[in-house]
Structure formats: C-alpha cells, structure tokens
Image (cartoon, rainbow, N blue to C red):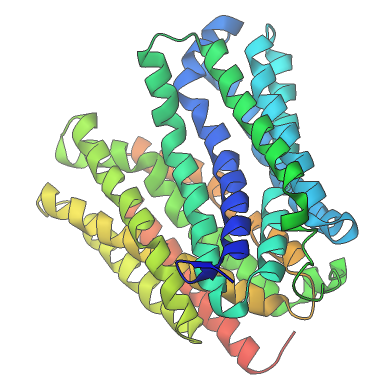
Length: 400
C-alpha cells in the first residue's frame, strides 16, 4: 500500500479528515473573538452579557462530552462526528442572523452541544483505525489541527475585518466551511467507517467504572491541573507581563505568541517521541517539570524581558511535547473499555480546569501580584506531575 510520511495512505486520509474537523471545533469559538464588540454593539448589550453565550457553550460541551462517548459506542463515531459538526457549523453560521441576546446565547448553547462530539468521536475513530505503532504521531497531528484552529481563528477573521467584510457575512462564511466539511465526511464515510473498521471495538465503560477507577480519576485530575496551568498564561500573561515590566500590550503579546508557538512547534516531534518509547509517564514528568521551572523563572520579575520570552517559549514547547504521550497514556488506560468514552470523560477536566481557576488568576492581578500568575501556573503544573506519578504507580500495581 502506498504510504505518506510513514503512514499508509488510508490512515493519512483518516487522520487528515478527523484533524480538519478538530481544526474547525477550535476555530469556531476563537473566530468569534474579533467580532465580540461588533456583536455586542449589534445586540445593544455589554461584553459581560455577551460572555453568557461563551459560558453556555463551554457548559454544554463539558456536560455532554461523556454522554456523547456512550452515543459513539452505540451508533458509531462517523455518524456522531458528522452530526455534531453540522450542528456546530449551522449554529455558528446562524449567529449572523441574531437580533436578540437570547438568540445568541441559545445558538452558542446549541453550538456547544455540537462541539461535545469531537473528543469522543475523534479519539474513537483514530484509536481503532490507526496502527498502535503510529498512534503517537496520529494523536499529535490531531492535536496540531485543534491548536492551529485556535490560533488561526482570530487571524482569519481579523483579515476579513481588514477587508471590511461585515461581521455577519464573515460568520456566514465560517459556518458554510463547516457544513461543507460535514458533507465531505459523509461522502468519505466508507473510508472512515464507524470507528471499528480496523480493530475490534471495545465496550463502553459503565458510569461506575468512570467514577471509581483510580487511574481514570487521576487522568481527569491531570487534565484539570494542566488546563488550569495553561489557561492562566493564555488569558492573563499579557496583562501580567505588562504590569511587571511596564511594556505595551504588543510587546507583552509577543511572549504569549512564543509560548503558543513553542507548543505548536513541538507537538509533532512529541508524536514521534511517543511512538519510539514505552515510557510515556517519564516523558510527561520530565517535560512538565521543565515547563514548571521555566514558568517559575518567568515569574521572578527581574530577568530581562527577552529572556522571559525564551523561558515561555521553552515552557510552551515542553507542553506541546507532552500531548501525544498524554493521549497514548489515556489510550492504554482505557483498556478494556472503549477509548472514545474514556477520552470524553477525562478531557472534561480540560474544559473545567481553566474555567474554575481563571477568576483567581484575575484576582491576583487585581491585588497587584502579576508575578503570582506565573507561579500559580507553575504550581498547577506541579500538581499535574503529581497526578502522573500516582497514575503510573496505580497502573504499575495493576489497579483499576
């Protein structure tokens, strides 16, 4: 069979299609960011009121992820993925028609329902369609797709604003792209299958297993802590650096760009590394320890700013290097149960970790301690390392 970058052509096509869908799942939420003020002005409300739509989106996604995992196991990953993508794209596109705040919030909630399918459906399809020896690279490509959507969403919409395209038209264009991809996934449905074309499909774990399994609960804790560490930097590092160094927003944003860019740059190498070793816990512990140390140094406040940029780039890079090893660990921990449901359950922590801790990060800035933003991020990273160490211990002892 013809191969591309070490993958059989069929696997390349599967990973490409699934990663494109993952790209859009991240693209849609962040593509609205440049239009927030225009949407708020159009509805005659403030940004605080508009943020209720974002809350509805996140809550619907988080609450429904695990139930969607069970739905994937019942009807198949492809059907759920196509349906979710269509709902997400149609909901986002329909925002162009809103005239009342309740309409915006309702559509964002509906978009969150559509978004809840991606983790269970994507990971289920990839896990059963890709050879175990290439799972690390497959997971890294999938993660890169999502991260790229997060970065390119504001950039693409910003470019449309530069072209003076009205915000309603821009959102219609974005929605149409997702609907087109949903149609492509339907057309190539035979290629993707239902998440069980290559390997025997495992049964879904009962709720009792999810809520009592120590390894799975520790992975949930890992996602919570890791998300909390990342969210503080993603949302408040620019304000914190501006306060610490007295620099303009543009300069402070450069450090965040290097942090995010470092993560993107090492995501794919992390996949290669994950495929070449069985010590995935070791990769996670070492990389996260380096990331936490760099974050602590960045919070000292007296280092040259150019050095802080480098520290954040290394910290972000180490986080990117961990992603594939993390996903392979979840894949191994899921056995003998279905991967999609387990991924959906543990990655719920990713959604709620940041949401719970962001107000505290903001409070640190309010009390005049911007340096503690970085120290708190480092501390949450250390907590995530603790979860990994305990997870390794329980898995080595054969505990479920």
